[in-house]
Structures are given as structure tokens and as C-alpha cells.
Length: 386
Image (cartoon, rainbow, N blue to C red; front, side):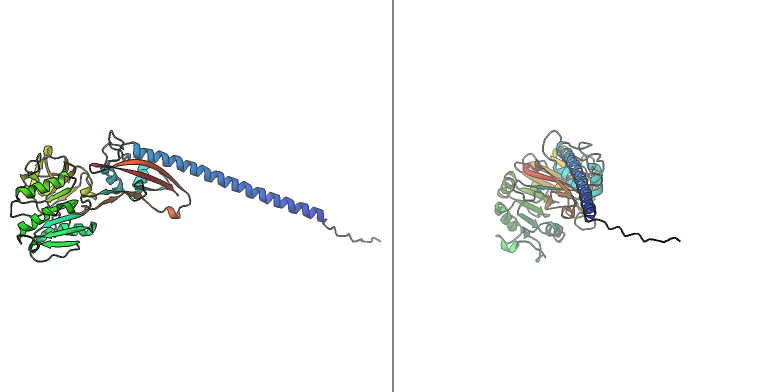
């Protein structure tokens, strides 16, 4: 007869359990350390790649003029901000850079999946700004209701200006101070203009948009000339008296009388006055007065469509200052010209979402940037992040 004998249970010894536990801990730590090491290596590699890319792109921006050399938003193949044959950043290219779509800029810069942000500051870390047509404190002299176009532009872009109103009634405004003819001696339009001329030392920019019914005298002519010669900006808009404000500046010839065909022009050179418009775009003005031979103008901004070789929005550099002439501040519908800027632009570009980024690589470079006739020192920080 078979007798079944039960087997005794085998119990794992404490030493064996301890060995398994230690082995498991060591294995886990090894895997964790391996993963951490791999992550660090990948992160280091990514950071190194981003640093190389940031250095390369910032070199392209600062050390090349781009392709073509005088590129704009319609023909750009490669973005570069350097002036031709100098080490100074070109204001016109900076404006075009600002106007390009973000994703287009990423493509031109070859950034792929990386995001970017560019910030240019002064050496003290304050935001650097390219001045607009208006610099510093401004004064406006106007006399007709349609001259309120300039007032609208000022209120949109600027908040430190005085209004010399020679028209009837009291216009709406947000000017710092409103002067009218009754404040002047004699109390008329002519007296108000002389009052402005005597106050020129208080301003950096003067805008005269007035179909004047009077001739300015020798003292007022000298005051305006000295104002610009000393670094002021003078913007002359549709002056009625044979462009008299401009023609008294030595070296600037009289403008020829414009006709209806000169109301429409094409931008042939970027300028801070029309920061929202690009080369090749057309502008139609509500009114017109004068046109100038292109050969007589320092910078032709808008060329007449109706009269070849004639400038209808022009810039002269005079002494330490500058003089603008344009037919009107309004378009053919009576609204302010789309894209006209009075205040300038801050030098910040791209997508500033760095606070939410996983990995950020900044590159700082010292720069020189042209601001009108002045050269400003600055620091460009180029961020690549993802």
C-alpha cells in the first residue's frame, strides 16, 4: 500500500530576501541614473544646438545687409539689418523687419521649430526706440477743420504736444495746451503764427498744416530756419503759399504746382513717417499742392504716379534737423492715411512668450543703430526658445 507523505514548505531565508531587495534598489537607482544622464545629455545637446543657432542667426542679422542688399517685405530672400558698407543697423530694414509676419521671419531666419524674440535696449537696459517723424515735444499750427487729421494722428500716437489753432471755434483735442488767435498779439492768424515762432525753443518738432493767407516775415523765416538747423524737425503739409515755408531754406528749391494726377503716389523708399507702408504700395491723398524734382530731394519717400520724376512726400536733411513735405495727412476718403506714424517704433520683435518656455537661450550683442542723422548705441538680445 502506498503511503503519501506531505512535503514540508520551503521558506525563503532572510539573507535571500535581503539580497533581492538590495539588487532591486541598485537596479532601480541604476536605471534612474541612466535616464537622468540621458536627459541631461539630450538637454545639453539641445541647448548647445540652440546656442549655435542663436549665434548664427544673430550674426546674419547684425553682420549682413540681407539679400537683396536693399530688401523690403516684397522681395526679401534673406533678412539682414546692416547698412550697406557700414557696421550700423539700417532703420529702413528694421522697419521692414517689424512688418514681416512672425512665421515668415522664422522661415527667413531658418529657425525651424524654434521660437524667437529680439529686444534692443540702450546700454542702461531701457527700451530703445527709433523716433518717428515727431521727436520730443511737438507743436501743431492749423487753421481749417480738415486739418484735424493731424490732430487725430497725434492723439493716436503721441501725448505731448501743443495746439496752435487759427481756425474758428474751439476744436476737440487732447493737447497739453491749446492756443488760438485771441491769445496772440495782434489777435489774428498772423499773430498766432508769430507766437509759435517765438516759442520754438520749447519744441523739438513743429507741424504746420495751414493754407496760410499771409506771408511770413524775415524774422519768422529766420526763426524757423534756426530751429531746424539746430536739430528740430519741421513737417510742412500742403502749404498754400508756394511752399513758402520750405523755399526759404537755402539750398531747397521751390516746389512746382501739383495737379490732380499727383494725388496718387507710390512708395519708393521706406521711412518712419509711413512705418506701416512698404516699398511699392500706393497712397492716395485727399488734397495736393506741390511736387518736387527727385534730384532736388535728399530722400524721396513717395513718387508721383501722375508725373514721373517728381516727389510728393519728401525729406530733406538740413543742418542737424530734417524737413518733411507731404500733400496731406488724409487719404481720398478723408481719413488719416493708413500706416502713417508720428511716434516711432520700439525695437522689439517676434513672440515674447519666454516666461512659458521650457528652454531659453539668450545671446547679447552690442550694436549701433541709425536714428535719423544720429547714431545710437544699444544692446540686442536675441532669444531662441522652445
